Amino acid sequence: MKNLSLKLEDNIFLETEKIVLRVKKNRNRYFNEAIELYNKLHRRNLLSKQLSKESKLVSADSLKALAEFEKLKDED
Image (tube, rainbow, N blue to C red; front, side, top):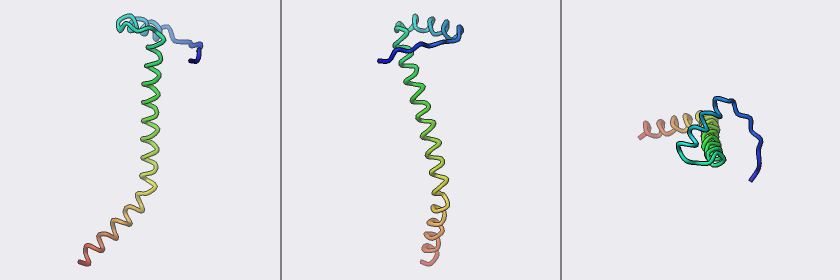
């Protein structure tokens, strides 16, 4: 494990302390779970952006292939 020094805004710290007491977790566990969730959110957003970008790159080729299939269908 890595040790960190963390500066939190007072209002965030106070809200966190209230929640930690209510959910009966220690502060360290709470922060680890929160950061893990935040990382998953960002990984998902980055993947979504990557897929969108790659989809745009192949869309022209997909439309060409569709047009070719349409021509074959019309020839039958």
